[in-house]
Amino acid sequence: MNKPALRELRLAKCMERLGTETAFEVLVKARALEATGRDIVHLEIGEPDFDTPRNIIDAACDALHKGFTHYGPSAGLPQLRETIAQYVSETRRVSATSEEVVVVPGGKPIIFFVILALAEEGDEIIYPNPGFPIYESMINYVGAKAVPIRLREEMDFRLDVDELAGLINDRTKLIILNSPQNPTGGVLTKDDIDDIARAIGDRDVMVLSDEIYSRLIFEGEHHSILSVDGMKDRCILLDGFSKTYAMTGWRMGYGVMRADLATHVARLMTNSVSCTASFTQMAGVEALRGPQDSVDRMCAEFKKRRDVMVAGLNKIKGFSCLLPKGAFYVFPNITGTGWPSKKLADALLDEAGVAGLSGTAFGDFGEGYLRFSVANSIENIEKALERIGGWAAKSL
Ligand SMILES: Cc1ncc(COP(=O)(O)O)c(C=O)c1O
Image (cartoon, rainbow, N blue to C red; front, side):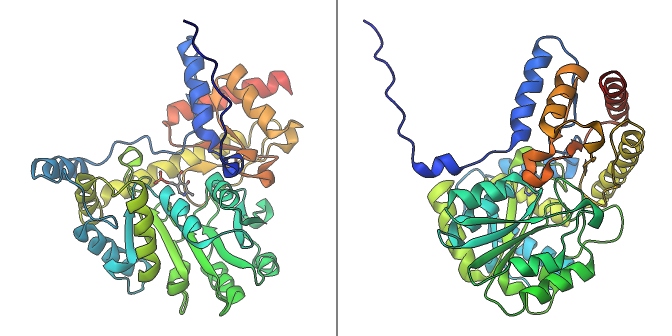
């Protein structure tokens, strides 16, 4: 018998508004090219190429043997929530309690849950552009208005606080900050943070402060808006284990927010994934409490690679690149090539075997830029530079 034809898929309208993260698509395309025998240098995906430190892996194995193999509370195991509360209290110089902590599978779900919990049609959310694409995707998904704040190269990709102040109005529900920033590597200064808090004043506006790269800073130190007097209760801190401890595949992150909002986010956890895996949470306790030298070593290595990548890019025709102050990306200006970003990213992958991302993968204001991750060896970074340089000499 003939198989009946598939009926038309009648998706919910909001799915048309849901975006994606291009890095995963480029990775698939790069892998497909590799399968045909091509050699590709991977500078597209945002994950440390280091192994998770041994003490953390041992703690997870130990937890498995001790029976942490069951469901746990939706908001996270008390041991980990308490450890996170202590860590955040120390690093952000605030007093955080475990009731204010929600442990989730990765940093990303905090974006998902907080926007779901707070925003709807009629609300406005200000977000960095270029920025992590999930912000805009989720804002659009819930039907709120996405209001971009442009990050400019001439300001070292920090945001212009006067411009931000001009975007805040009575409909503004949430402001998303991200420092150190993906994709630009921009870092907000203490003055920036103070000025942003001043621009918000005593308005009833929440701030989602995405600090997932807080430990990966090359110059200066990390400043959090939570530390500003009077701001903590209006802030949701997003942080996690993926980038700091090379634990992207473990899927574990957290949010710190006023306790009543935390119960709502925990309810979203109950409705979606129930809880974060229990044994990984015990490894999270070890990550935060155990030795931290691996974090410092990884950060120093990223800094070396950043220096090689930026110096190399600045020698290539049509490219100019600022020295990013944090995270593990470089964001070269490619307007000198005369090529649009997406076309250039595609050509570098197809013709030069270097996988990077178009700046437009991070929003409209990313046009004129590419993003390369430096989470790869110096040897591979040098190989990528040689290939990009060779391609530019031949094609521009
Ligand atoms: C700015 C930013 N926030 C959040 C995340 C999500 O991190 P996780 O892998 O822990 O979900 C990423 C990951 O690339 C990121 O770049």
